[in-house]
Structures are given as structure tokens and as C-alpha cells.
Amino acid sequence: MEHDDGLAAAFSDIKKHQVESSEVVSSVEHELDGVHDGLVFPTEEEKQTLRRVSDSIPWNAYLIAIVELAERFSFYGSSVVFTNFIQKPLPPGSRTGAGGLNGQPGALNLGQQASTGLTTFYQFWCYITPLIGAWIADSYWGRFKTICVAVFVALVGHIILIIAAVPGVIEEKSAVGAFVVALIVMGFGTGLFKANISPLVAEQYKRTKLFVITTKSGERVIVDPALTVSRVYMYFYLFINIGALIGQISMSYSEKFVGFYLAYTLPTVIFLLCPIVLWIGRNKYNRSPPTGSVLATALRLWRYAARGKWSWNPVRMYRNFTAPGFWENAKPSKQVEKPKWMTFDDQWVDEVQRGIKACGVFCWFPLYWLTYNQLNNNLTSQAAEMSTHGVPNDVLSNLDPFALLIFIPICDLLLYPLLRRMGLNFTALKRITAGFMTGAASMVWAAVVQHYIYKTSPCGYSAGECEEPQVSPLNVWIQTGAYVLIALSEIFASITGMEYAFTKAPKNMRSLVMAFFLFASAISAAIGEAFVPLSGDPLLVWNYGTMAVLSFAAGIIFWWSVRDLDAREDELNNMSAGSIDTYNDEKLH
Image (cartoon, rainbow, N blue to C red; front, side, top):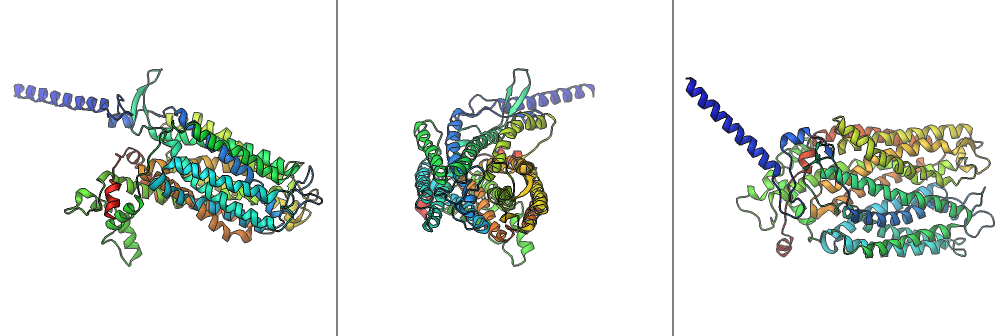
């Protein structure tokens, strides 16, 4: 018996040694793909225990960020003065729209509701056209070529915008027509650009798998590509807001002291940096070639998976479509006779499933963007109802990018690493939920400010009709809290949304999924049109209060709906890449 026990113990030791050896082998396993060669991959135990860090950002990502900086300078630099250009009349004796130190700049004199309507339409147009840009890039031109074409189209729009503001045109009714044409052309170019610049910057970082390194202090940590992509977008957004901040401040003073023609010309000059930097780095960017139209195949796959799951009972149909095995029966390996159009593997089905789930997450974003969009019109008008002490009313909106320049490095270098050291996993979906809540808080702040404007304004509940010096004695800087809270909400919701779109999309559909994320802003702008009647006295407190309630309620329902998806974050990020033969698929069509 003792002899048998010794054999059993020896056998157990050998088996344990084999298991440990297999774990070591799996940890040093690497792929010969030129990207992950020689890296040490973590075991399952290490994934649960080791601290995670981000990798360094490749320099060519910064080059693309410079292009975005120039484009955002031109976009925000020109659009920041739209509210005054549309809403206010030409100052007495002015042929440029400049109001001087104590005057209010203006041009078209169409009123606040027209101003809110046109700027909301511009928002809608800029965020629906990315769907076109994404389809062109993924299917035919690739991201880089589409961006180059977008730059040319937007440049034409900027030139038309200048024409609408030059002396001799700005005083005439024809300025309205030229201005609207400029919005349409610029918005189309912006849409083609936005769908592709965000995926292009993240694609400069090529690694996709977790790997282990040892720090200088001797600590073994996991380098997480998802954290690196998050960091890429944090600094990409930082560059966006550098351009926005400089553009908005300088153009606000340009319109006030020189005129709208200068406020539209200077952004156009800076915009010319885009083609220059694109040309300089043309051979240095990591580009994904177009793969043909995969959208039709993805839709056909979904339709195939949905067979037999339709029902007149909406509850039953919802359960059928959200059941765990919805996609399993559509995988090629499950087919007895595989249809000819199934030119992809099982992994690509998993990627499509992941991308569709991401699009489901973005369906909640329109309610978030309703709060952010107040920056572009109503909060600018609110500033004009208070004592500005010579500061242009549209300068206040620059508190948002200024706060972002401060908070983005704080989050990247202090807040997020501290949470990880404390063992708190502040995942993408948790951050988005926090974005909804801080957005709601910003609208509460704006509602309180508006309430006190009505109480203190000489015009009472018609505060928008007053002009300096007959305005509320409240100092305009009390708006600061609203802008700071909106900036925090952008870090949590907007930046994370871009990260989520990139990391969850199939590689050959990244522009499309990013465009769907941006499309949420278009839907928000369309919903915002329904709230235009609230964008005027005496209903503005109700306007801000409604936005706060919508954002808060959406945040609660959003988290309830995605909490299960949040638990699978690691699994989704480390999914194997699939493949699809688009050439043969197109021949079959």
C-alpha cells in the first residue's frame, strides 16, 4: 500500500510538472507576424493578477494628430462665430460685422431660433456624411485617399464661407444663401474626414495581443493594447482641443474687432496645413487597404442568423435576437452545405457580432450629445445675457477645450493609473456611464445660471432681448462650472466612444463602425430640432432641465443594458482576427 501511494504521488508530481510546463510554454509562445515576434504572452492566472499598463504611442500617430489639429482649428474657429453671424444684426455703421470693444458682433439678424436651427442642421449634416465616407474608404479608396479628397472638398466650403462674409456681400440677403451653401459643402468634407481620421490614427499602433514585460523596478506587468488605443485617443483628443481652443479664442476676437471675413479666412489658412502634413507623411503611415464591400456580406450574415427567429410577439423576438446562440448557427463550420457567399471564417462572424454589439452601445449616445450640443448655441447665447466686461460672449465656450487640455493628462497620468493600482477596473462602459452623469450635472448648472439671469436681468424673462450694458449683472464667468463638467463628460464618453468603436469593429469595417458612432451625433442633432422651441425666452430653464433629466435617465438605463457586456470586456478585446475573401464574394454577387 505504501509502495502504491508512492507511485501515485510520483505520478501526481509528474502530471503537475507537465501542467506547469505547458503554462510556461504558452506564456512564451509568440506569433511570427513581424509585430508580436518574441513577446511573452500572459497565462490566464497572470491576466487576473498582474497590473496592466499601456504601451508607448508611435510617432506617426502624432503626425496624424497634427492634421486633425489643423482641421479642428478651422472647423471650430469658423463655427464658433456662427451663432453671432446668424442671430445678431450688423452693428450700426459696420460693413464687416465687427462690434468693437463694447458692441455685439452680428450679420444676418435671423434671431436665436434660426441660429439654433441652422447650427443644429450643421451638426446633423457633419455627422451623417461620415457614413458615406466610411463606405467609400472601406470599400474602394482606403482611409488615406478618402481623407485627401475630404480635405479638398472642405477647402472649397471654407472659400465659399469667406465670400459670404466679405464687405459688399455680408450686407445683402444673398449672404444667407452663400452661408448655407458653405455649410453644406464644408459639412460634406468634414464628414468624409471624420469617419477615417480616427481609425487611421489608432491603426498606427499595430499590436493587438496582451504581452508581459518587466519594469525597471522589477515588477512584471501586462501591456494591454486596449489601454494603448485608449491612450492614443486621449492624446488625439488633446490635439483636437488644442486646435479648437486656439481657433475659437482667436476667431472670437477677430469677429469682434475686425470682422467675420477675417474669422473665416484665418481658419482656411491653417487648414492648408492638412494637405502639407498628409503629403510629408504619405510614405510613413500604416495604412489598411480597402477590402471591397463587406457591408452587404455582414447584412446577409445577420439575415441568415435571424432565420426562424422572427415573431409577431415583440418580447419573444427580442429574446430570440439577443439569445447567446444567435450567431452560432450562422458560422461556416456549422453548415452541412456552406452557401457560396460564405467566404469568411468563424472568427469573422465573432468580429461582426462584436461590432454590432458596439453599435448597440452607440444607440444611447444621441441622448448624451443633446447636452454637449448646448455648447454650440444656447450656452453662447446665455453668455451674451450676462456682464461680459469686454470679453466676447463666444469666448466662454473655450473653457471646454481649455479644461480638456488640463484634465486629459491628469486622467492619463494620474487618475486611470491610480484606479488600476487600487484594483478598480474603470472599463470603457463604466466610463461612458460616468460621461452621461457628468453631462447631466453640467445641464443642472446651466439651468441654475439661467434661472438667476431671469431674476436679475432688466428684461426679466426676455433676457435675450437685452444688450450691453442693459444685461444681467451676473458675471459671465459663472458659466465655468457647466463647461468644466461637459469637458469631463467628453473624456469619459466621447473619447471612450471612439476607442470602443475602433477596438470592437472588424478590421475591414473600422471606418463604418466609427461612422455609426459619429452618426449618433447626427441623430442627436435631429432630436435637437424638436427642442428648438425651448431655445428661447422664457423657456430656457426648461430646456437645460430637460437635457439634464434625459442624460441622467439615459445613463442609468444604459448601464443596466450593458452590464453583462462590460463583464466580457477582456474576452472581446482579445478575440482572434477573422478573414473574408471579398474578391470571390464580389464575383458571386
